[in-house]
Length: 271
Image (tube, rainbow, N blue to C red; front, side, top):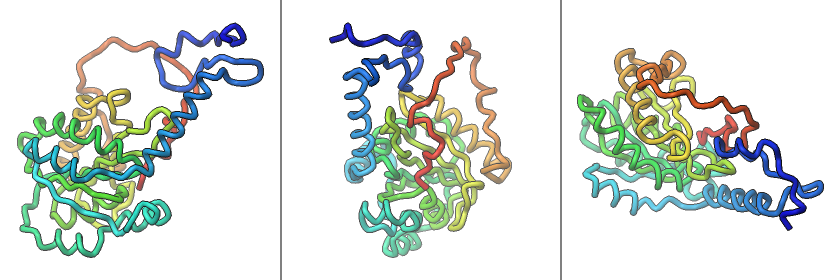
């Protein structure tokens, strides 16, 4: 059967990217193997959106690593409402809002929130390794309890941070799944969080996963942004990510130009 497949001359470039390039051709269509791979990736992306976050397991893993935790739920009562009513995912449930308001005031320098977002896979797989990578860098920071949030949108972190009286909130949230990245984590940093903050007031680090932006590099960028956010008293459009200038010099990778697949589309914000 392989005799009927015309190889693409770009085939050698596939080692540099997960984008769907150089797939070959069988007549006027794709060969069977890449077509089946596409269908599998599409099914994995759909599963990532609908798969529930195992919050109990996440709390157990965090506590085993000596993190204090809190559990919250947005105003979206279930996944159907979460997907149809993004506004509900941006606010806490009445019960959780009242519970957080009654906590002792610790006023931490930074509060981390792990939200399921549009991929619970990402929150479950990437958040704890990232916390392990970044917390040793925060030697002079007070860190609040890690909040695990279900049915969460990005802006839910604003209300959580405000109620915890945190100087900065960091939302670790599952991004919209792409066709080669159903488990990509996004990081959103907001200084002086409060209900009503806009996306222009936050910084974002995207595609955190071993196959994308790995944990050490993501932690380096996050530490850089946190440090300068505290120094300047702001995040968002006024805070530029120049963290690459402080990285050790590495050999330049070969320049590759290729059409990105769906995982690289800019609309990855589950906010």
